[in-house]
Image (cartoon, rainbow, N blue to C red; front, top):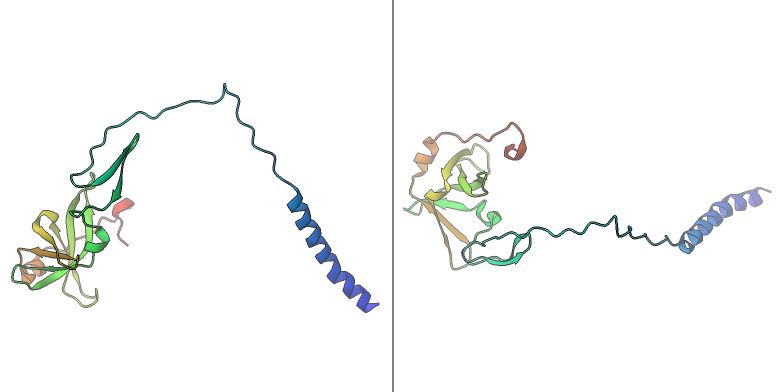
Length: 171
């Protein structure tokens, strides 16, 4: 009797599982009906004129431009952040920590971490992007230099992140 009850307890869920999976395979959803012609709206986006940046490989569409490849005179932000900054005497004065963009998407400032060890005790200083010289080394890496000294950066005012919310919120 016990074995009969045990077999029933095992067989019942298995039968239900097989039955529902077979049922699920047999049903097909009905095709979605197209809305009547009177309800469909035919719209065409207004064409816009977009001028790609000089040297940028771009493909123009009705809604804007899409870049298809990085040009030789462009830099990816991920390649600049973390890059060492040197002065004209070839002394390392800091590392790029952040790129700060203005409302037009242009790089306004570069935040440089000065001093410290592995980010501890590091001072953040913002300099104008225009003050940096970025050159491409033979290996393709960025070589960033600026006309300053490590002492000048250490004595510069601390950079404070905007913390009232939105895109400028600090980590």
